[in-house]
Length: 333
Ligand code: KG4
Ligand code: ZN
Image (cartoon, rainbow, N blue to C red):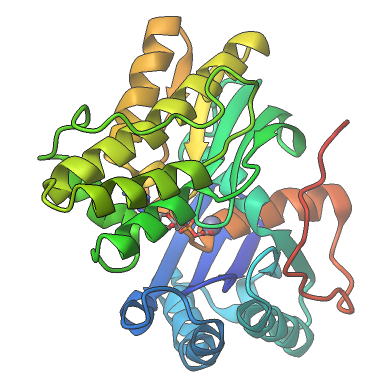
């Protein structure tokens, strides 16, 4: 049995978890700073870093006590080392290195995006591979082909804004607050997705995405038509994002003959996206895996799952590794 204490502080969630053998979540604690940042309409890096300092020790204490595990029973300490906000990453990485030294445990540095890719394994260890994974968060939008755990190929990615960024920017313009995704998701449930025909960026043109034109088009439309019901604007915008995400992940799965389709990242919590991906997979006869909402958004359990895999394949990470805000995922060519 290998018990790993994992820490995630790449953005605005302070999270810690204890994961056993890479698959069993003994505890997963997430303390969201969303209320702190809402007043500013987005994550303020300096505020996030300071909040992580205040929250991390109690969050780690809570994760250990909920898991009912003494620190003497841990086998490793892991932390997200990138990509993310440097001031936020540094808090988790420094704390994990300190625990590792103080408790005499190996340290494992984890790539946040590889964490999102592993989230699915935590809930469905038997996910059929190869899988095509749509990773959609506030910072990233990509389609990844996963032939096995740790073996990834980049199929497509956004050439400008990330999907979550588009949700957040449009919500901000519409005066809906931060974060924008959950509000637009909720409002759209009662809006008409066909009310406004917003553009579908790069439709039918390979597997890359573009969302900045859509954002501009929503802004221009609302300026010209200020009386349109905000629910209809939200639903029409959401439909434009979901259409291209689903169309491309579906085409990628077909072309690469994937056995399953999976989604991850904060935007994967979106109800319309979940429904559309499930429907597309079903009609194509592919397995579909939709991690729970808690496992789609940032958490430390996914970091613990990845750390278990990395510890077995690469061994411990040297303590002189630096937090890297631009850390890239290692893709096969
Ligand atoms: O993965 P995540 O928790 O953090 C990173 O960016 O790494 O993703 C956060 C993003 C935000 O842009 C947020 O607006 C979006 O995920 N999001 C959603 C929903 N819930 C969160 N977007 C659309 N619909 C949702 N229900
Ligand atoms: Zn994330």
